[in-house]
Image (cartoon, rainbow, N blue to C red; front, side, top):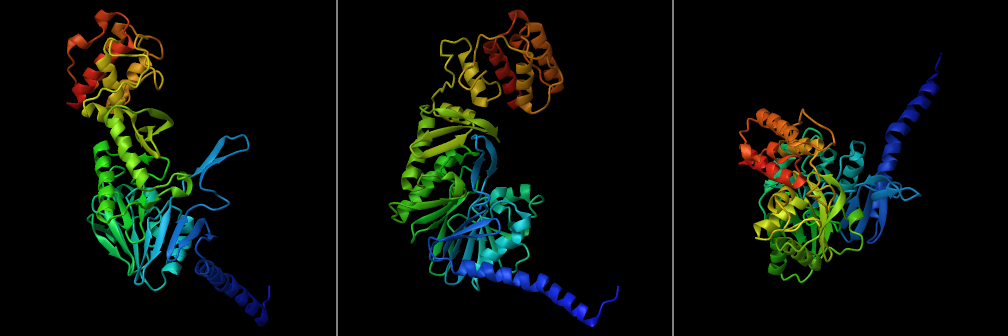
Length: 447
């Protein structure tokens, strides 16, 4: 095929239009949309929604009208999907601009997030600060990995936690600078105090803007539908107490907190001082054993229940709540079909606390029901996290069968168990009797 000189000119102009002019026009559109955004208005850029909350303060998240934040349901009301949007915040000072958190990993949309922040930040010095080390808050690091001059900040306590996600999310750990709680970030005309609020992670922080009575809390106190408590109740109590004391120090009678997933979890709940007070009371009810743990309907990393008071919800493993009550001298019974008069009551409560041998239902233990093979083998597997070779199905065990399973487990794990915990002299063991044996095995493994 023969091409004329004019043909080549047409081809060259077409390529120029496709690869240079169209992207430039697109970037200009993004810049124009962002710079013309008035307080209270929002716009969509790629997968992100950007909201101008007020002058020089923006809220953005990875959801749009086409992919709405939160749970998606069909016409029949059945859940079809979840867009677990993770929120970010941009504040512009006279000299510096800060992006708080880096949301979920979206490798196809790194350029969009980079354009949003760099466009709004302009010529200001740029800071990216994360509230904690979880992947849904550092996921888009690669959007800025090659941008020179950006300072990345994370608390010293949470910096080690980044290593678990470094490979999957292409994190360059050397780019992150650790800081101690209490450090102040001065943007020029706007300052953020770093307030440690432990519990969700060891080094979770709230970035507190005292002058504007706002805080950016990540997941430290939840976003309205429950704080996911991976740490201890004591550490979380210390964290919330520290935040309230910091508000007192700055004479803040109230505060508005912006959470890490407020775009879909907050609903009508106001993350304010009353919310924090409710959190402290919620913790107190657990310590007093006066709480109700509602089953989540699923389990995730040991979390299986919600404990609520007022506007506050703590999402936690029920066993951890039982232990916290027991550490405060209170025995908490999660079952409706046992009492202190039930044989082996203490062993049953111990198993509820450790969550190694559970009830047949969330609120029923059925202590007199015969122990089955699958109940015993799955419980032994839960104790040390190794699969059990021998299983007898869901049929009731006799004492000799149960002893054989336990002997095999003890041999595999190098345990010497006292003979008086075995079942052979007890006929068909009940679930209550099994609780005694399981407690002894657990203590032998963990002492």
